[in-house]
Length: 123
Image (cartoon, rainbow, N blue to C red):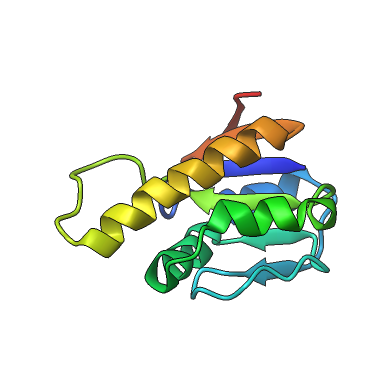
């Protein structure tokens, strides 16, 4: 699995499509559950936000479906920077997203940070 992360609007999806042999994309940015039949799972942070709203742990979902995403490219926006939100759900979302990213980074063959469309391999 390849994990790609970076700030909003930094070209993460375009980077993945240009640099890896991938064709199909599942966009989870609106909170949809990942479709692991696709090559790229994009917008994981949207899925995590929906999990936080529902009170379920996103990392548990990925642990339970581990064999389904081992050959995928997973893409998430880095939400760890900036001011800590006042809203409890948004704080829970940021913490949950961090837990998921820690788990996925540990499991990944490669971890790539994308900034201004330029990827830098972290792992």
